Image 1: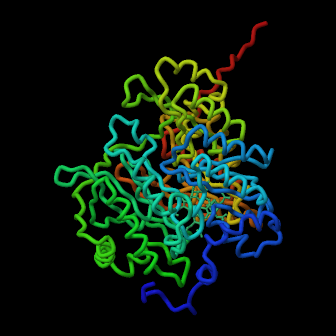
Image 2: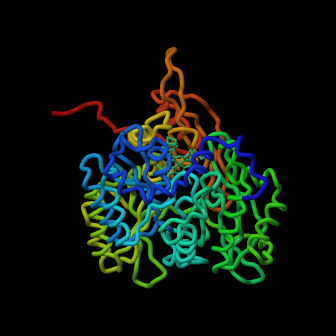
Length: 522
Ligand code: SRM
Ligand code: SF4
């Protein structure tokens, strides 16, 4: 490792336990853990190292683990969905799966003794959960319309898959990238609408023409944390849409791995290194690691559309085929839903299923002739193609139901509150509202038009669940992060505050009163 890393004495406790034993090492101990039972496992293995395999001990539900997958570009097959459904089905009421804000799935209720068998099943269908937590590269996002969108510039599917395979050694685990200073996010956008929130990733590729050739401009350093949130900045690099994308990701990861700050975990994300070095020194180090001259960025990128939410029925570039975007309330799926979705993807489409960063789901490749019967499926009553305007654009992190960082309950509260407001008000357009249970910002309140971040508030002299309100988040072209405008509103008092905000700033209107005749004749 490079000499700029602080001496071992200043390493934080995470660095110390990583130095003692790499997180990935628990892979070889899974059978032993399964026999021992979770209560008997070393605490650091249980609470931290298992996350290198995507296995999250949940202090809120001890013994019932969360399993975070990797779904590159958010694309999975009906077979894979069925295997995931079978896994959560084992756990009855405890079993479910959440679509995440990184186009991914997290399974719940998992028992550690079942994990060796679950991993064998994953391997059979090409699924992996490796390196999906802690100081690793998270699920790599890509355009959900890749290969379907008539207006797409670059099909991101292969590139995302190649980057994931390089980082994870094709799902087997890759010790080169299991000890980063901190978590790391990568996104590859191939369309015009910035469907991946490029600006909030540590590395983002956005389509751009350089000297007439289509490729990507590269952004770096975007991140959210409790202490600081930053939009990504230009690396002043353009790459063609080929293996250079993979090589550049690896070069950036190596420079970050070997030079990133490791003393204070609150100052360990990539942007802190860029700050310390300045972007020119950072770029020079990347170029050296990349091993050949990097092309300077194109003047403009091609992100010039408003962001689409993909809910509804849309024609694909393939004549006669359509994709159907289903709204999944709060991204939550149960085993039966997952079996049904797998079946529907096979019956009406090509067996493919896609996920979005808005925690929704797309079934592509439905022929015109099959659309009517698809749309008559009972599941579409719950997973609508035309949800009410606030419900449609609602995103929420996990919150107190399963997350021990949470300061508030999120998903159920968000849905109930939004339904109550929808019953009262009419909206000229959807309003993007994101809930997040604590300042870690997993629910991305800063990209929302209205962001709600869990906090502790005071009411009648008592500490109660509350939110800070963020406004001004813009997505798509001219993306911009929202900022905090009001702090500490008790959740019990939030509904009227939200209602007024929606009326005053988002054009909502009270629903026309039901006219009750003044004289009722008999
Ligand atoms: Fe997150 C930690 C859930 C997207 C920033 N995040 C956590 C943990 C693992 C904490 C824990 O151990 O309990 C949460 C697991 C709760 C659970 O049981 O589900 C958690 N994060 C999530 C998910 C599931 C939210 C969701 O409901 O969709 C998302 C999973 C994505 C995935 O598939 O990998 C999720 N987290 C994000 C995002 C959004 C994004 O990537 O676009 C962010 C902000 C962007 C970023 O990272 O720059 C985010 N999560 C954090 C942070 C703050 C990171 C930091 O630098 O300080 C933490 C805490 C940490 O890492 O120390 C965290
Ligand atoms: Fe948990 Fe906080 Fe992330 Fe929500 S934002 S999932 S409460 S860490």
